[in-house]
Length: 362
Image (cartoon, rainbow, N blue to C red; front, side, top):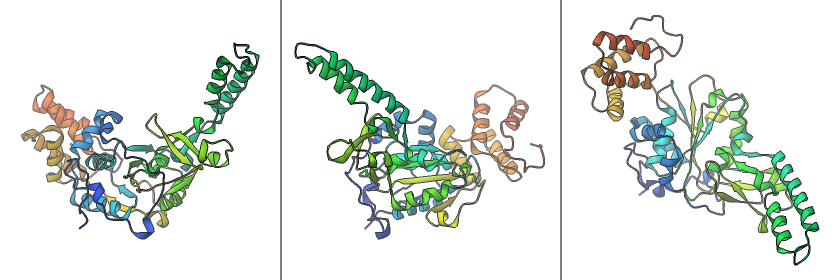
């Protein structure tokens, strides 16, 4: 029987991802050559201590567990919406850590982001400079009169060294999305953060790539000089290692676990939404908040529970983020202040994030 849930939300790493059932026929991919799964132990070195801590302490709700598994089973992107501070970005790191998917590939979206940015970056100017260096090296080699003439060891070494850096593949690097779609043996985790900040066209531009699980690199498709067999070795995102790309085409084998986050600042096209599994994260209740505080800072004391109650009452009239509460509780435990001073400090640490609140009363 297939394993359900694959992602449990317990924060205990395991290899359950290998027990996923075959994908639906319309979501099956056959890219190659197959690449080995990235080293899961490299994840801690690839992310900041803050992200590692958030992954280890993430408190998943029942809805979160169910919908993450739905996205994994269906091989569909997970669109995570909700107010700031509800753990949308942390979810990607928590799932990647538990399922040993390796370092999370992160694409931070701005109003200037394009699909091309996520797939790959190509620097034609650096290639032009390398070509000029190669031509200069070849010219010097022709003039070299070593023991074996123009083709002596000295001349050959200089010419070959210059030629090694002049190919297109040496001036091209895959982006986070482009790397996630490589034919890895197990899924990669990709975080597309704050997709609602993008240009209006980006969600529609993503449709075909996420639906087909593949893309082309025109510069490599058109290239006349590739490695033997039409395979180019290009740099993947987040690493200095090169991966093979055959004939300029990339097609995934295990569809990546894609998390797209949104703060709800815009609506998305229906065609985009129907291709995603949608998870809406709400502000946590008192029990969930206590679990979050316990995971990050240990068992809540009496004053921490007072702050939790105040946080919940204020959250009813304006937007607050959970990390604001954690900051207030941490300082309450660390600072040697009287209760009145702590109350005043907590008020300053938990300001409303928007203009919806009608009062400044704490």
